[in-house]
Image 1: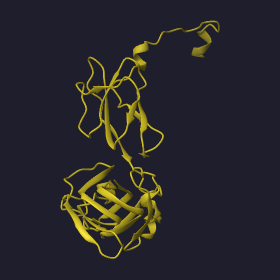
Image 2: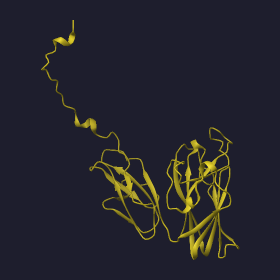
Image 3: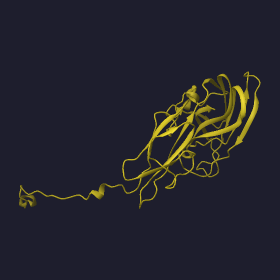
Image 4: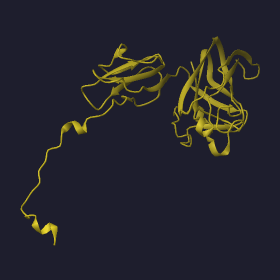
Length: 263
C-alpha cells in the first residue's frame, strides 16, 4: 500500500517558528572599523554590533574593558597612538569576549630601512620595505606583510629624512605557538646622527612567553630618553628555541615582525 496516497493533495501543513530561535545564544564582540592602522594627525574609528539592544564599552589604553568602562555612543577620534579594546554588554548576559586593535600615530617619515641579514626566503614579504609600508600583518603569517626569521635575532637600521628628536620605537610582532612563532624576548636600541657612530640608548628585556595556544599580534613600545638622531638601529631578540612547554621543545622557533614606527 502506498502510504502517501492517503494524504489529500490539497492538504497544507502550516506552522509558526518561534522568533527566539534566531536570537543569539551569546554576545559576540563588537567590530572595530577604521580605514587605516596608521595616521599622522588624527583618525576616526567606529565600534559596531549587529543588535541595537546591546551596549559597547571600550578602553584606549590597552586595559581590559567592562561595563564600567567608557560607553560607546559616537565615533571615536584618536589623536595619539592607542590600543583599542571593546566588549559588548546587555542586561542579563555575560560580557562578550574582548576585541582589540592597535592604531599608531606616525611622527616621522622613514626614508629607508636596512637589515643586517635577510629574512627567511619563505617569509620575506617585501624585504626591509615591509617594515615601513604602513600595512599591518594579520594572523595569517603568509599574507606577505610579515618578515620571518628562524632561530635568529635580527637588526634593522632606520634612516629618517632628517634629524629628529625621537622618544619611542614601536615594533609590531606576531605570536602563534602552535606554528612555532613567538613574540620577541627583548630589544636593544641605538641612535646616531651620522649613520656611523651609534650610541646605545635602551635595552629592554621582555622575557619568554608563558604557556598559551593563542594566535595574536601586537606592538611592543620601547620608550627611550628623548634623543636627536637621523638613524636608529633596533635589534629584535628571538626566543630562538621552542620552550619546554611546547609540543616540540627545543625545536627552532620563529620571529615575525611587520612594522617599525618611530615617534
